[in-house]
Image 1: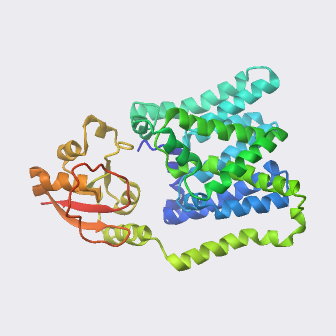
Image 2 (image 1 turned 90 degrees about the vertical axis):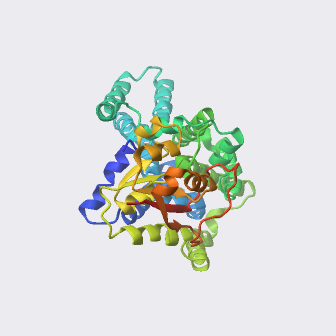
Image 3 (image 1 turned 90 degrees about the horizontal axis):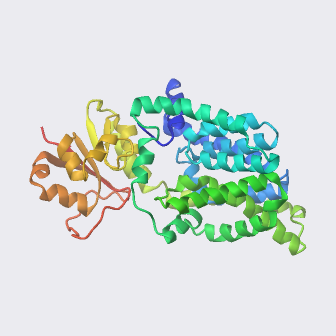
Length: 414
Protein backbone atom coordinates (compact mmCIF):
# COMPACT_ATOMS: atom_id res chain seq x y z
CA UNK A 1 0.00 0.00 0.00
CA UNK A 2 2.91 2.38 0.49
CA UNK A 3 1.75 3.15 4.01
CA UNK A 4 3.76 5.42 6.30
CA UNK A 5 4.09 2.58 8.83
CA UNK A 6 4.86 -0.61 6.85
CA UNK A 7 6.10 -2.46 9.95
CA UNK A 8 2.81 -1.79 11.73
CA UNK A 9 0.92 -2.98 8.65
CA UNK A 10 2.86 -6.26 8.89
CA UNK A 11 1.99 -6.53 12.60
CA UNK A 12 -1.66 -6.21 11.58
CA UNK A 13 -1.39 -9.76 10.22
CA UNK A 14 -1.17 -11.14 13.79
CA UNK A 15 -4.88 -10.89 14.73
CA UNK A 16 -5.85 -12.54 11.44
CA UNK A 17 -4.14 -15.77 12.53
CA UNK A 18 -6.35 -15.85 15.62
CA UNK A 19 -9.53 -14.65 13.89
CA UNK A 20 -9.57 -11.51 16.03
CA UNK A 21 -10.91 -8.21 14.72
CA UNK A 22 -7.92 -5.94 14.11
CA UNK A 23 -9.67 -2.93 15.65
CA UNK A 24 -10.24 -4.79 18.94
CA UNK A 25 -6.79 -6.37 18.91
CA UNK A 26 -4.96 -3.08 18.66
CA UNK A 27 -6.90 -1.47 21.50
CA UNK A 28 -5.50 -4.19 23.79
CA UNK A 29 -2.12 -4.11 22.05
CA UNK A 30 -1.81 -0.36 22.55
CA UNK A 31 -2.79 -0.73 26.19
CA UNK A 32 0.13 -3.14 26.63
CA UNK A 33 2.44 -0.69 24.86
CA UNK A 34 1.28 2.07 27.20
CA UNK A 35 1.93 -0.14 30.23
CA UNK A 36 5.42 -0.76 28.89
CA UNK A 37 5.90 2.99 28.47
CA UNK A 38 4.65 3.55 32.01
CA UNK A 39 7.21 1.09 33.37
CA UNK A 40 10.12 2.64 31.46
CA UNK A 41 9.12 6.15 32.52
CA UNK A 42 8.84 5.11 36.18
CA UNK A 43 11.99 2.98 36.31
CA UNK A 44 14.40 5.16 34.35
CA UNK A 45 13.06 8.64 33.63
CA UNK A 46 11.42 9.30 37.00
CA UNK A 47 14.13 7.44 38.96
CA UNK A 48 11.57 5.22 40.64
CA UNK A 49 9.74 8.11 42.32
CA UNK A 50 6.27 6.82 43.18
CA UNK A 51 4.90 10.31 43.84
CA UNK A 52 6.00 11.56 40.42
CA UNK A 53 4.67 8.35 38.86
CA UNK A 54 1.22 8.98 40.37
CA UNK A 55 1.17 12.50 38.93
CA UNK A 56 2.42 11.30 35.54
CA UNK A 57 -0.14 8.48 35.47
CA UNK A 58 -2.90 10.93 36.30
CA UNK A 59 -1.86 13.30 33.51
CA UNK A 60 -1.52 10.35 31.15
CA UNK A 61 -4.98 9.01 32.00
CA UNK A 62 -6.68 12.41 31.87
CA UNK A 63 -5.04 13.67 28.67
CA UNK A 64 -7.76 13.56 25.94
CA UNK A 65 -5.15 13.40 23.16
CA UNK A 66 -3.39 10.40 24.74
CA UNK A 67 -6.74 8.68 25.25
CA UNK A 68 -7.89 9.27 21.70
CA UNK A 69 -4.67 7.95 20.18
CA UNK A 70 -4.48 4.93 22.51
CA UNK A 71 -7.90 3.67 21.47
CA UNK A 72 -7.39 4.66 17.83
CA UNK A 73 -5.36 1.61 16.87
CA UNK A 74 -2.45 3.61 15.43
CA UNK A 75 1.28 2.87 15.50
CA UNK A 76 2.13 5.78 17.81
CA UNK A 77 1.94 3.82 21.07
CA UNK A 78 4.35 1.12 19.92
CA UNK A 79 6.63 3.75 18.40
CA UNK A 80 6.88 5.68 21.68
CA UNK A 81 7.49 2.54 23.76
CA UNK A 82 10.27 1.33 21.47
CA UNK A 83 11.78 4.83 21.23
CA UNK A 84 12.01 5.08 25.01
CA UNK A 85 13.35 1.52 25.12
CA UNK A 86 16.03 2.56 22.64
CA UNK A 87 17.09 5.42 24.94
CA UNK A 88 17.19 3.06 27.92
CA UNK A 89 19.27 0.47 26.03
CA UNK A 90 21.71 3.12 24.85
CA UNK A 91 22.23 4.65 28.30
CA UNK A 92 22.70 1.16 29.76
CA UNK A 93 25.63 0.54 27.39
CA UNK A 94 23.69 -1.67 24.99
CA UNK A 95 24.40 0.73 22.19
CA UNK A 96 24.34 -1.73 19.30
CA UNK A 97 20.86 -2.93 20.31
CA UNK A 98 19.73 0.67 20.73
CA UNK A 99 20.87 1.84 17.30
CA UNK A 100 19.55 -1.35 15.71
CA UNK A 101 16.13 -0.98 17.33
CA UNK A 102 15.81 2.69 16.42
CA UNK A 103 16.78 1.93 12.84
CA UNK A 104 14.05 -0.71 12.54
CA UNK A 105 11.32 1.48 14.02
CA UNK A 106 11.89 3.93 11.20
CA UNK A 107 9.42 1.60 9.51
CA UNK A 108 6.91 2.40 12.27
CA UNK A 109 7.32 6.16 11.95
CA UNK A 110 9.93 8.10 9.94
CA UNK A 111 10.54 10.35 12.98
CA UNK A 112 12.75 7.56 14.34
CA UNK A 113 15.52 9.17 12.29
CA UNK A 114 15.30 12.21 14.58
CA UNK A 115 16.07 10.10 17.66
CA UNK A 116 18.83 8.29 15.77
CA UNK A 117 20.35 11.68 14.96
CA UNK A 118 20.05 12.90 18.56
CA UNK A 119 21.60 9.70 19.89
CA UNK A 120 24.41 9.85 17.33
CA UNK A 121 25.22 13.43 18.33
CA UNK A 122 25.09 12.47 22.01
CA UNK A 123 27.53 9.63 21.35
CA UNK A 124 29.92 11.97 19.55
CA UNK A 125 29.70 14.51 22.40
CA UNK A 126 30.43 11.82 24.99
CA UNK A 127 33.19 9.86 23.22
CA UNK A 128 34.65 12.60 20.99
CA UNK A 129 34.55 10.06 18.15
CA UNK A 130 32.27 9.40 15.21
CA UNK A 131 30.41 6.10 15.95
CA UNK A 132 31.09 4.52 12.57
CA UNK A 133 30.10 0.98 13.62
CA UNK A 134 26.67 2.15 14.74
CA UNK A 135 26.25 4.27 11.62
CA UNK A 136 27.09 1.27 9.44
CA UNK A 137 24.73 -0.97 11.46
CA UNK A 138 21.90 1.51 11.07
CA UNK A 139 22.63 1.92 7.37
CA UNK A 140 22.48 -1.84 6.77
CA UNK A 141 19.24 -2.30 8.75
CA UNK A 142 17.63 0.59 6.89
CA UNK A 143 19.03 -0.21 3.47
CA UNK A 144 17.75 -3.78 3.13
CA UNK A 145 14.02 -3.06 3.68
CA UNK A 146 14.30 0.20 1.72
CA UNK A 147 15.79 -1.72 -1.20
CA UNK A 148 12.88 -4.17 -1.08
CA UNK A 149 10.46 -1.22 -1.05
CA UNK A 150 12.32 0.29 -4.01
CA UNK A 151 12.09 -2.93 -6.03
CA UNK A 152 8.34 -3.15 -5.41
CA UNK A 153 7.32 0.52 -5.61
CA UNK A 154 10.12 2.13 -7.61
CA UNK A 155 10.90 4.52 -4.74
CA UNK A 156 12.34 4.21 -1.23
CA UNK A 157 9.92 6.54 0.52
CA UNK A 158 6.35 5.38 1.21
CA UNK A 159 3.88 6.89 -1.20
CA UNK A 160 2.02 8.44 1.74
CA UNK A 161 5.13 10.43 2.73
CA UNK A 162 5.65 11.63 -0.84
CA UNK A 163 2.01 12.70 -1.19
CA UNK A 164 2.03 14.57 2.13
CA UNK A 165 5.26 16.36 1.26
CA UNK A 166 3.58 17.82 -1.82
CA UNK A 167 1.09 19.77 0.25
CA UNK A 168 1.67 23.40 1.09
CA UNK A 169 3.30 24.71 4.25
CA UNK A 170 1.06 25.34 7.24
CA UNK A 171 1.16 28.75 8.96
CA UNK A 172 3.29 28.88 12.10
CA UNK A 173 0.20 29.53 14.25
CA UNK A 174 -1.40 26.30 13.01
CA UNK A 175 1.78 24.38 13.75
CA UNK A 176 1.99 25.76 17.29
CA UNK A 177 -1.63 24.84 17.95
CA UNK A 178 -1.30 21.40 16.37
CA UNK A 179 1.82 20.45 18.32
CA UNK A 180 1.42 22.13 21.70
CA UNK A 181 -2.16 23.40 22.11
CA UNK A 182 -4.42 20.92 20.34
CA UNK A 183 -6.71 20.62 23.37
CA UNK A 184 -7.53 22.96 26.32
CA UNK A 185 -5.81 20.40 28.58
CA UNK A 186 -2.52 21.45 26.95
CA UNK A 187 -2.81 24.95 28.35
CA UNK A 188 -2.12 23.35 31.72
CA UNK A 189 0.51 20.88 30.55
CA UNK A 190 2.66 23.07 28.29
CA UNK A 191 3.78 25.70 30.85
CA UNK A 192 4.41 22.93 33.40
CA UNK A 193 6.48 21.03 30.83
CA UNK A 194 8.54 24.14 30.05
CA UNK A 195 9.17 24.66 33.77
CA UNK A 196 10.12 21.00 34.15
CA UNK A 197 12.52 21.15 31.22
CA UNK A 198 14.25 24.22 32.61
CA UNK A 199 14.60 22.62 36.05
CA UNK A 200 15.26 18.99 35.20
CA UNK A 201 16.69 18.64 31.68
CA UNK A 202 20.38 18.81 32.69
CA UNK A 203 19.97 16.69 35.83
CA UNK A 204 19.67 13.22 34.34
CA UNK A 205 20.88 11.58 31.13
CA UNK A 206 17.51 9.98 30.38
CA UNK A 207 15.75 13.32 30.67
CA UNK A 208 18.43 15.09 28.65
CA UNK A 209 18.14 12.71 25.69
CA UNK A 210 14.32 12.56 25.85
CA UNK A 211 14.02 16.33 26.17
CA UNK A 212 16.37 17.08 23.27
CA UNK A 213 14.53 14.46 21.20
CA UNK A 214 11.17 16.12 21.95
CA UNK A 215 12.52 19.57 21.05
CA UNK A 216 14.09 18.30 17.80
CA UNK A 217 10.92 16.32 16.99
CA UNK A 218 8.77 19.43 17.29
CA UNK A 219 11.44 21.52 15.54
CA UNK A 220 11.40 19.21 12.52
CA UNK A 221 7.68 19.79 12.10
CA UNK A 222 8.13 23.54 12.42
CA UNK A 223 10.88 23.37 9.80
CA UNK A 224 8.83 21.39 7.28
CA UNK A 225 5.38 22.76 8.19
CA UNK A 226 3.14 19.82 7.17
CA UNK A 227 -0.45 19.14 8.16
CA UNK A 228 -0.25 17.42 11.56
CA UNK A 229 -2.65 14.74 12.74
CA UNK A 230 -2.85 13.95 16.45
CA UNK A 231 -0.90 10.69 16.44
CA UNK A 232 2.08 12.34 14.73
CA UNK A 233 2.94 14.19 17.93
CA UNK A 234 2.02 11.48 20.47
CA UNK A 235 5.65 11.16 21.56
CA UNK A 236 5.93 14.94 22.04
CA UNK A 237 2.75 14.90 24.12
CA UNK A 238 3.89 12.11 26.45
CA UNK A 239 7.41 13.49 26.95
CA UNK A 240 5.77 16.78 27.92
CA UNK A 241 3.77 14.88 30.54
CA UNK A 242 7.01 13.51 32.01
CA UNK A 243 8.43 16.99 32.52
CA UNK A 244 5.08 18.41 33.65
CA UNK A 245 4.77 15.77 36.38
CA UNK A 246 8.26 16.64 37.61
CA UNK A 247 7.32 20.31 37.58
CA UNK A 248 4.43 19.61 39.97
CA UNK A 249 6.82 17.90 42.40
CA UNK A 250 9.33 20.77 42.13
CA UNK A 251 6.66 23.43 42.64
CA UNK A 252 5.34 21.53 45.68
CA UNK A 253 8.88 21.36 47.10
CA UNK A 254 9.26 25.12 46.59
CA UNK A 255 6.05 25.58 48.57
CA UNK A 256 7.42 23.20 51.23
CA UNK A 257 4.79 20.58 50.53
CA UNK A 258 5.81 16.94 50.84
CA UNK A 259 3.44 15.25 48.40
CA UNK A 260 4.53 11.78 49.50
CA UNK A 261 2.72 12.38 52.83
CA UNK A 262 -0.67 12.73 51.17
CA UNK A 263 -2.01 9.19 50.81
CA UNK A 264 -5.05 10.33 48.87
CA UNK A 265 -2.76 11.19 45.94
CA UNK A 266 -2.47 7.45 45.28
CA UNK A 267 -6.11 7.47 44.14
CA UNK A 268 -5.68 10.26 41.59
CA UNK A 269 -5.33 7.94 38.56
CA UNK A 270 -8.56 6.21 39.60
CA UNK A 271 -10.36 9.55 39.57
CA UNK A 272 -9.49 9.88 35.89
CA UNK A 273 -10.98 6.45 35.21
CA UNK A 274 -14.19 7.38 37.01
CA UNK A 275 -14.18 10.69 35.13
CA UNK A 276 -14.12 8.97 31.75
CA UNK A 277 -16.84 6.52 32.88
CA UNK A 278 -19.06 9.46 33.80
CA UNK A 279 -18.36 11.12 30.44
CA UNK A 280 -19.25 7.87 28.66
CA UNK A 281 -22.45 7.59 30.69
CA UNK A 282 -23.44 11.19 29.96
CA UNK A 283 -22.53 11.30 26.27
CA UNK A 284 -22.82 7.67 25.19
CA UNK A 285 -20.92 6.25 22.27
CA UNK A 286 -19.83 8.80 19.71
CA UNK A 287 -21.96 9.46 16.66
CA UNK A 288 -18.99 8.58 14.46
CA UNK A 289 -18.73 5.15 16.06
CA UNK A 290 -22.47 4.46 15.92
CA UNK A 291 -23.59 6.10 12.69
CA UNK A 292 -20.46 6.08 10.54
CA UNK A 293 -18.40 3.02 11.49
CA UNK A 294 -21.45 1.08 12.64
CA UNK A 295 -23.26 1.93 9.41
CA UNK A 296 -20.33 0.85 7.25
CA UNK A 297 -20.00 -2.43 9.12
CA UNK A 298 -23.70 -3.20 8.83
CA UNK A 299 -23.92 -2.32 5.14
CA UNK A 300 -20.79 -4.10 3.93
CA UNK A 301 -20.11 -7.05 6.21
CA UNK A 302 -22.25 -9.45 4.10
CA UNK A 303 -21.17 -8.11 0.71
CA UNK A 304 -18.39 -9.54 -1.45
CA UNK A 305 -16.63 -6.45 -2.81
CA UNK A 306 -13.28 -7.96 -3.75
CA UNK A 307 -13.64 -6.85 -7.38
CA UNK A 308 -15.26 -3.52 -6.60
CA UNK A 309 -13.40 -0.20 -6.74
CA UNK A 310 -14.15 2.43 -4.09
CA UNK A 311 -13.04 5.98 -4.75
CA UNK A 312 -12.51 7.80 -1.45
CA UNK A 313 -10.68 10.55 0.43
CA UNK A 314 -10.88 8.91 3.85
CA UNK A 315 -9.99 5.29 3.30
CA UNK A 316 -9.33 3.54 6.63
CA UNK A 317 -12.74 2.43 7.88
CA UNK A 318 -14.08 2.04 4.34
CA UNK A 319 -11.24 -0.29 3.37
CA UNK A 320 -11.57 -2.27 6.59
CA UNK A 321 -15.32 -2.86 6.34
CA UNK A 322 -15.88 -3.00 2.58
CA UNK A 323 -13.11 -5.40 1.60
CA UNK A 324 -12.95 -3.70 -1.78
CA UNK A 325 -10.12 -2.11 -3.74
CA UNK A 326 -9.57 1.44 -2.50
CA UNK A 327 -8.59 4.19 -4.91
CA UNK A 328 -7.22 6.91 -2.63
CA UNK A 329 -7.97 10.41 -3.88
CA UNK A 330 -5.38 11.79 -1.43
CA UNK A 331 -2.71 9.71 -3.23
CA UNK A 332 -1.35 8.37 0.08
CA UNK A 333 -1.58 4.74 -1.00
CA UNK A 334 -2.52 5.13 -4.68
CA UNK A 335 0.47 6.52 -6.60
CA UNK A 336 -1.31 6.47 -9.96
CA UNK A 337 -3.77 9.07 -8.68
CA UNK A 338 -1.01 11.69 -8.94
CA UNK A 339 -1.23 11.54 -12.74
CA UNK A 340 -4.44 13.56 -12.65
CA UNK A 341 -5.03 17.16 -11.62
CA UNK A 342 -8.11 16.73 -9.46
CA UNK A 343 -10.75 14.36 -8.11
CA UNK A 344 -13.05 14.88 -11.11
CA UNK A 345 -10.38 13.74 -13.57
CA UNK A 346 -9.52 10.72 -11.42
CA UNK A 347 -13.14 9.61 -11.21
CA UNK A 348 -13.71 10.05 -14.94
CA UNK A 349 -10.55 8.09 -15.76
CA UNK A 350 -11.46 4.97 -13.75
CA UNK A 351 -15.25 5.22 -13.27
CA UNK A 352 -15.14 3.35 -9.93
CA UNK A 353 -18.02 1.20 -8.69
CA UNK A 354 -18.56 3.44 -5.65
CA UNK A 355 -17.81 7.02 -4.66
CA UNK A 356 -17.30 7.56 -0.92
CA UNK A 357 -16.97 11.31 -0.56
CA UNK A 358 -17.12 13.94 2.15
CA UNK A 359 -20.61 15.43 2.44
CA UNK A 360 -19.31 18.64 1.02
CA UNK A 361 -20.86 21.20 -1.31
CA UNK A 362 -17.80 20.97 -3.61
CA UNK A 363 -18.19 17.24 -4.17
CA UNK A 364 -21.96 17.37 -4.29
CA UNK A 365 -21.88 20.21 -6.78
CA UNK A 366 -19.33 18.36 -8.92
CA UNK A 367 -21.53 15.29 -9.21
CA UNK A 368 -24.83 17.09 -9.75
CA UNK A 369 -23.50 19.60 -12.27
CA UNK A 370 -21.29 17.26 -14.30
CA UNK A 371 -23.29 15.68 -17.13
CA UNK A 372 -21.28 12.44 -17.05
CA UNK A 373 -21.16 11.89 -13.30
CA UNK A 374 -24.79 12.84 -12.70
CA UNK A 375 -25.90 10.13 -15.13
CA UNK A 376 -23.36 7.53 -14.05
CA UNK A 377 -23.90 7.62 -10.28
CA UNK A 378 -26.86 7.33 -7.93
CA UNK A 379 -26.82 8.43 -4.31
CA UNK A 380 -27.16 5.48 -1.89
CA UNK A 381 -26.62 6.64 1.66
CA UNK A 382 -25.17 9.30 3.92
CA UNK A 383 -22.98 8.36 6.88
CA UNK A 384 -23.18 11.33 9.26
CA UNK A 385 -22.23 11.48 12.98
CA UNK A 386 -25.61 12.99 13.85
CA UNK A 387 -27.51 10.39 11.83
CA UNK A 388 -28.59 12.88 9.16
CA UNK A 389 -29.90 11.06 6.06
CA UNK A 390 -30.51 13.83 3.53
CA UNK A 391 -27.94 15.62 1.40
CA UNK A 392 -27.46 19.39 1.62
CA UNK A 393 -29.48 21.28 -0.97
CA UNK A 394 -27.47 24.52 -0.99
CA UNK A 395 -24.16 24.97 -2.77
CA UNK A 396 -21.45 27.38 -1.72
CA UNK A 397 -19.54 28.49 -4.81
CA UNK A 398 -16.54 29.55 -2.73
CA UNK A 399 -16.42 26.45 -0.56
CA UNK A 400 -13.34 24.27 -0.20
CA UNK A 401 -13.22 20.60 0.71
CA UNK A 402 -12.66 20.21 4.46
CA UNK A 403 -11.94 17.00 6.36
CA UNK A 404 -14.90 15.93 8.43
CA UNK A 405 -16.22 12.48 9.20
CA UNK A 406 -19.47 12.95 7.32
CA UNK A 407 -19.69 10.96 4.11
CA UNK A 408 -21.99 10.25 1.18
CA UNK A 409 -21.96 7.03 -0.82
CA UNK A 410 -22.78 6.88 -4.53
CA UNK A 411 -23.02 3.74 -6.65
CA UNK A 412 -22.36 3.47 -10.37
CA UNK A 413 -25.43 2.64 -12.42
CA UNK A 414 -25.41 -0.67 -14.25
